[in-house]
Amino acid sequence: MSGLLRNKAILITGAAAGIGRATALLAVQEGARVLVSDIEEAGLASLVREIEAIGGVVEARLVEVGTAEAAKALVDSTQAAFGSIDGAFNNAGISGPMVPLLEYPDVQYERVHRVNLDAVWHGMKAQVQVMMKLGAGAIVNTASVGGLVGRAGISAYVSSKHAIIGLTKTAALEYGSHNIRINAICPGVIRTRMNLQFAHGDQALEDQMAKMQPIGRWGYAEEVAECAVWLLSDRASLVHGHALVADGGFTAA
Image 1 (tube, helix red, strand yellow):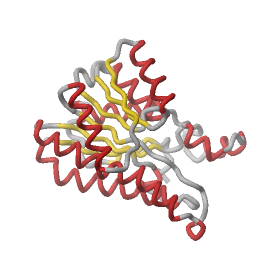
Image 2: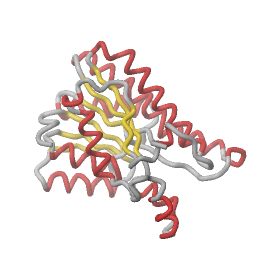
Image 3: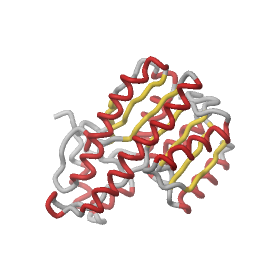
Image 4: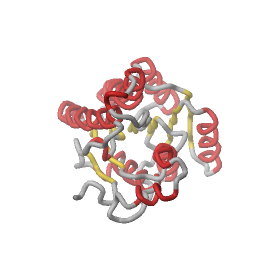
């Protein structure tokens, strides 16, 4: 790819690590100016240094997503910094505990949905409102293969990701006529800190997780970033209301 996001102003949440970080770096390499947000100060500062070292244009905000106020603040900050908001990658997410439904704490269920789903809900409302005035825009929401299939022990995570896909498709139907493309990505078993927490450093379990994908290996954040950046670009002009699966064949069976 070359210059896919040249001069575009892109907002990215959950950018301190994993898929968000990889997407921010690739977006800058493809010509974007990025506003990155997270609650992890050290990771966010490290990302800013890395972007500036390659000559990229970046702004950073320490923000906990999940509220209308946070969503509006991020959109306002992106406009203030760059004069526009051409794209948004609603990527912030957490996994929550791994326990059966009857043992799942309500407070953890609510937190998972606030970070994973409410942040997308409020984020899109703030983003679409501004993009309608600008006459165009592209939004990508991070769902998961957990939004397409069930998985025992992570009911809050799975339900939040299913909801993201439904919300993405519905918003796409409502705002496609305003030249705003809205899509989701569904990563599989990706080698990120969040997924590695499931393995607890157990190499045998890591190997077992790799085999869940027919390609026989974990995916990498950089591979998912390629999908996100393409969906944010004008090259994906006909892709709308789609949940793009990047899972090494996990859901093919």
